Length: 174
Image (cartoon, rainbow, N blue to C red; front, side, top):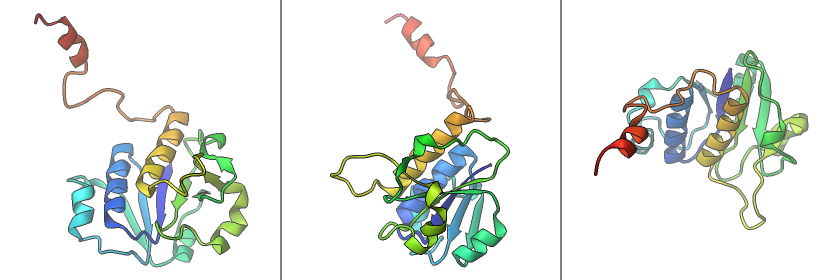
């Protein structure tokens, strides 16, 4: 099972966007305190739209509690990572995989990263940008892992409209 972990997130809008991504991908979300906001804040609700009640959410007092309660393979997204996110194998559908993202201002502390250097990854980018927005990074990484797992049970067509809407549109008389 794939999991998203936010270490001490600071910006409610980012967490709301990530909640929406987690619902869209059937991915549990783990938040490690302290949080830079209240989960009741309207910014979280607004960013997560009306999907927040559907997110599989877990909150921990600290990183030690998270590690004690969750066993599996941990991947750390960090600008200090030397291996692109696409070079890891996430294809085992039966493995608990945790993608850990740091707080927006400072990332993941080096003391947490040091024992896991072989699992530190980064998304390649130009030298002109220090880091991508965390909600964008979560989406990039989770969809790469899902691609490797053939998207599991995710729908590959639009469920709210006719799945052949484009073909129907092209065949109608103007």
